[in-house]
Image 1 (cartoon, rainbow, N blue to C red):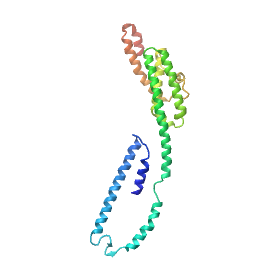
Image 2 (cartoon, rainbow, N blue to C red):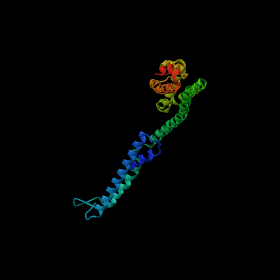
Image 3 (cartoon, rainbow, N blue to C red):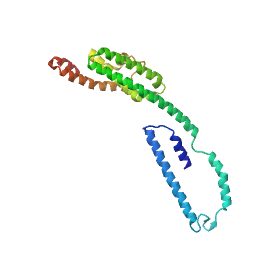
Length: 241
């Protein structure tokens, strides 16, 4: 019981947030509660047995160890029990330090990736209004911000790429693809999109495909807006289709 209680106390120092690890830690707390209840019930049963005639002081009619001897054994075993521990607190402390370091990188990545997403969306909005100059400015800002995030954070911990940073790259890919569609009336391949982005690292295939899939929504909106101009915009609508 002392082991699982010590483990619970050590794990409570972690900030697991709302994640799968948090749910597993909740399972640890449930197990500790069950063991505490079991220990209480066992202790209560032993006290009841001790109060009954011929309780714990005798077993099968034979006297148990003399109380003095029993007390001596418990005193001698106590310090050894305190020295031995199944929980390596130093190891948990080192894990917590690494976890906190990763969590700090994750928070910075999330915060800075939001700026990339915002700039990419603003570039798309500018393209919808035919403001290509502002769109190019926003796309250039996206590339610089994404490059600095990758160099300072993601390169040190590659697993960070699969979160919001990867989503921001999908948004950037969508904006670049939509820009090419509006200006050149064609769909960029992955290599062409990479060259147009100006990023110091490569788009992954899922990021490219995600951006192209999101592009269909922007093309659809462009078709609807073009159709509102009547027959004069039939060529633009046909291109979107």
